[in-house]
Image (cartoon, rainbow, N blue to C red; front, side):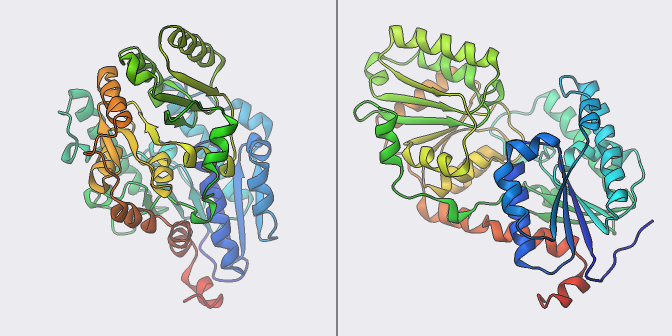
Length: 422
């Protein structure tokens, strides 16, 4: 078993085979924090081969410093991983990823490792699978505390999920090599009692304040030829059923004609061919019978372009279907001071209510969505973004705090002292 060294050759290995969502942003922010604190040793990111091409811009920015290196698992290793299409395959893949994680930690002679998506490794950790060095991880999806603030009654399914999560997490934290649990849910740490050798920290989802592009929304609105003074509703990210596409499009059928004349819906993000066909067919049908403008953009866009879309929007849609954990969409909307129409479930709903970010509704109910869209179009005075609370939320999620907390916990204090950071 390796022990943490305190010299300049300290090696931190981060493992993440996910490509989209939060993951490239986390890698970039962690890299920036590392470079700002050089010399600390070597930082390795073990990623999927596709990450190197899909996020070449992130790789290029990070690789400008010689202390940062990307290591892709082999094409064969990637191809051998099970899909996540079923519960059995997901669990098998989790064990596969844990073995890969351990293999690369050994290969790269890691002093400490960070699992950027810890949820995928909780089961093998709980089972006691060995690991060659200390490991920490970012925890995305706790549910065991949702009953304390959810407006919906708990179902038996909710109780069973909460019991399962608590059981597996408790066993995983007892792994002898585990060190720090970084919880993206700021409320969850109050409900976790770790063993003596483990620390639990609330980790704020990072927002890069330098990325905001003020004033670019008006130009984009002209380019997209948005008609008149329509209220623009933006749904962005991967266009999947979990984003609420089905109840959203169904809700438009329930709107009166006068309201439809005042709505422009922009759907921005990658979608499967099946989902594209469904959206295109449904949107065309709606255009035939309603005076609604629907714009479809089936593409992944870089942050700079995404910020233009958010700046252009009047309302940001976050209609997840029983989403567990944090949402980057809420943070991006708050950064631009845009109201949201959000699911009322779990942490997302609690943040919208607590910080007064917009409306939190039953996002599985098309009629509730339709009613809320109409309220925004009619500029219901009851709906108001609390700018002071929004500022507090954004300030607490500054990207520099994200990287500073992780590095202070994962890099030995002796290394920090030598870098004159303490």
